[in-house]
Image 1 (cartoon, rainbow, N blue to C red):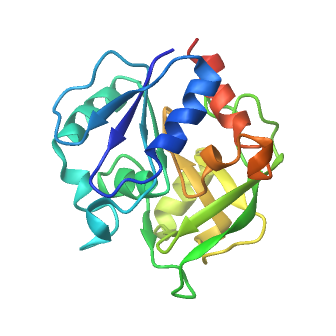
Image 2 (cartoon, rainbow, N blue to C red; image 1 turned 90 degrees about the vertical axis):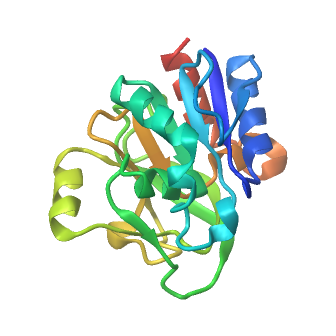
Length: 220
């Protein structure tokens, strides 16, 4: 399995994601600059956390129009796995590759803390090594993680099994405690928490490894 990480101006978790991917796959991921128009041969593209373009306009809104995103959209249509974490989730929503949007945290403060996630759907390449209802101890670090979707969209993603994770203790006001969602085909995942910062004992949790090992096993 070969992964690629998309680097935007303001990304700051790309090295964390690279370390987690190399641990799971045994291969260094490609680092792809956002101004590139093509992806190298790869099975998975990861959009990492950070503050692309300084979070100007709206979080992820400017990055969603970077040249590489046209290629990301085309690859997603063909079934390639795309994973957006934190700012990457915001970018995927702004690009229309995932339903809903991320708003300012309900308390209007930046959140950096441990959270517990509940796995809502383990029928995906990203969650196949988890059990439904399993709790994962990970961290969040965001100011705009308040997931929102219109009532009809919310019903559609709930009925379609597109909710990947929910917060056990909602840190940001996200509707229905939603922490991560899939697209309809479940080849695109967006999530606000950082599993890449929960893969080693020194992190205080290794629960994030379930997700990296899941996608590595699926695409081996």
